[in-house]
Amino acid sequence: MRQLKSTIIGTVGIIALLATANLSARAGAVEWEKLLNEAQSAAQSKNYDGAVKLYGDAVNECLSAKLEDKFLAKTYNDLALVYEAQGKFADAEANLTKALAIKEKLASSDDSGLPSTLGNLAQLYRRQGKFDLAKIQYEKAITIIEKNSSANDAKLAPFLTGMASMYSDSGQLADAAKTLRRVIKLMEDTKNKSGQTVAMNNLAVVLRKQGKADEAEAIYKQVAELADTPDSTGRELNAAHNKAAALNNLARNYREKQQFDKAEPLMKQAVDVLLSDPTSNKADLIIAVDNLAMVYRELGDYKSAEAQYRKALELQKAIPGAKPIAVADRMQNLALALLPQGKYDEVEALLKGSLNTYEKEEGANGAGVAVALTNLEELYREQEKFDLAEPLLTRALNIRKSTLGANSPAVAATTNDLAILYKEQGKDDQAVGLFQESVRIREQEPESEELANALNNLARVLRDQKRYSEAEPLYKRALAIREKVFGPNHESVAAILRNYAILLKADNRLDEAKVLNARARKIEDAAPDGPSQ
Image (cartoon, rainbow, N blue to C red; front, side):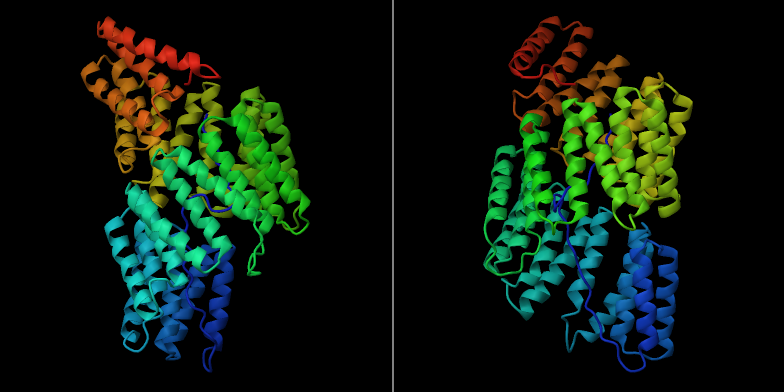
């Protein structure tokens, strides 16, 4: 069953925050500053259409009042970020290019304002999968900072982090790890404990992608130990947050290794850490409770998961001025714990209610809308209401293609889900095309677990069509990837062996099939929980 991914406390994925410089109000710029503040407020509340209009008014004010070019550059830069948030990448690029052109004209006297816009443009290219262009912008920003200061300036950290993210997204994992180790060293040297924690978490993510689960686990343990050390600088204001994040990430590592019994006590401890600190952020507590519920779901203890999800929902509702989207997120998660218990009426009510909220708050093409559609489709598919399920998933796929780009991992996942839906309806020819598209997208990370899954799914439908010569090399690739990522004796390897053996048996290669089944049985017998799926 597909899951609504809970937000992880702390930085688990690689994130680069690139702030633009604050420009002081000056004589003749009062109206511009007022418009800019209103636009920023609108953007923060996700009133993007309103923000775009206000930024447009701010641009006109700059031009009519003949303000200094730096004011116009900032306006274009910030307007671009709103377009990016809407998934309007062409508009975002056009405005960032304008901002950059203005700043480059000013750079003869001071180029310190260039890196922020270069970083934003790099991030935009990275999100679209234009990795070569992204790298050029990151390198320009880094070169400027190193020229103006040194190779050890902490201001380099967000740009190096963005470049590491770009490397990771493009499958250049060794370069990503190398870059993140440089960030860790920068944070260590400047005694920035919080920054060091984030960078170490990011490195652990890359190590997991490289199949170095043990090394990642060691990093997470170091982060947990670092969270317990006193902060001598007085800059750490979120000790409970950082400790809970470290516990959460270590728990996640165990979850990915399917060692849920080790993850559960860590998540309980994370909840306790936040409860014991009266200054801790309530949002962090909600997320920790939510993640504990996820562990229970993974253990198959849906009653306990339900109890924790209900607790998270009530905590969310109790926050003064609770954001409707945050409440909707909790409703989604509760629905996913109720679904395996067959509580279909409550599940449908929760999913429809959250979908309405997302549509109202985000618009028809919001990210939350796509998630809600896929979960509601899951409910109908489980009830074999395919006529209701298919249009929901098709709509979700179209939303993700238009907002994230055709090569997004989320598009690959949704394409795969639609292929499975067609397969369940016996529409194998349509399923094959979609599975092939999912594989094409996943090839961006050639040694990832996700690619192995996509290859396995495509191989299975080809096998069922008796296209054995096409299916076999896919099974071989999927097997090699899983062996590299998880090790040769992992349950997921046994699952591929079983599937491959079915093909060999169907192709009358009985001796080869016996060898694979025997190896799979040996792995399964050694596993604590029996065969994988």
